[in-house]
Length: 518
Picture 1 (tube, rainbow, N blue to C red):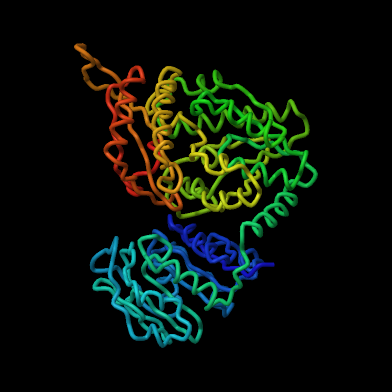
Picture 2: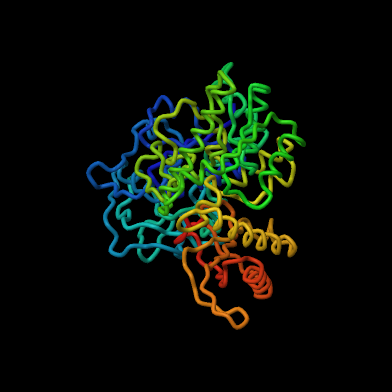
């Protein structure tokens, strides 16, 4: 049994980043909605609690409240943003609307109390007091026993602590990359304040995931939707370790994969790794389902529906299959604002999450549901998956359907496939497809522009190049590629891809944009 931290989720879009940072310190943690039953949360036997941020105001009627068992437990607590305000309110402090909202970078003014607060998780802020704020309310009076540990011009209480009871609160977000000392703040809270042992590793995750899969599946048979990417590949490897030959992998060629991928997936997983793999060519089926569909949410729902129907058909053909395994990661869940996260704001529907049909015969198994991409890769390495699988370029479940903006046709898919292959090829030759960039792809717009080739006027479609750098895919920045590389890609696309006469480069970060266009 690993030492653990319980994170209570009050609806923040960055709650899972808290878990990511704590796990980076090799401490196990789990996320629970704030209104989860006390019995379920305390069954984790946590050594401490973290209260996340959230979009509500603590003084509004119906706002999420701090469960009484948290303070009754006597365990350490770290409240973040809304979580700090809840902590202050529950203990007799006062929270009110700020005179001015505070979003973005802020410079802390640190109190001398930080050094005298016993084992303070906030001590790392002394060297790097820049933090990321996102709040419209503030604590105006701290509870009895607390000390003000930091402030900003707009927040008289930017951090507070009651070291005797091991209770702390911060108005800023230590989980995001824009708070440089944030990782160390969370690490110190987990290891030094809560006293957790750093025993949580990829090997430990594998051990636990295998047990959980066996408990869920019992003696049943499992289908795994295998796309060839790291998410589904790690899922398949985990399920295979848990149930052995009771797993059958289904690879569905939707017609919306990148150039050469259908052949590569079969060669890797059936021939090289020896997995039982059924390849289904459903290209016409998916194209028919998407005919005339232009809204991105409708595309995702159509693709999700069609995937499930193909899997159910194959399950029926194979006989006695009751479970469907998917490589869903937590960014998919958090951006879909799934029903298990009340209060969270929906950004987009992921085809594995909100895009699934309401009525399904197969029960879902999603062992990676609370992992980030880099954690999934670390687990894949521990499972011994090939490097080319672990480092395959991320690819959305609906495939090129959400990269062909507008209506999806075979002609437009082929056009995008060709442009995408040029971009990835040039980035690969330049050695930029791993550490330097984390995701790269082309998008085809339903926009025509006037051009000239030779002496002729052209009126053809536009390709956008999207290349980003990111740690966790929750936030991302555009990659600063060299002008020469961009010029080479652009020149090849307009000369080699029929029907395209203009190439653009997307220089928008996430947020405000998402990485994918649809």
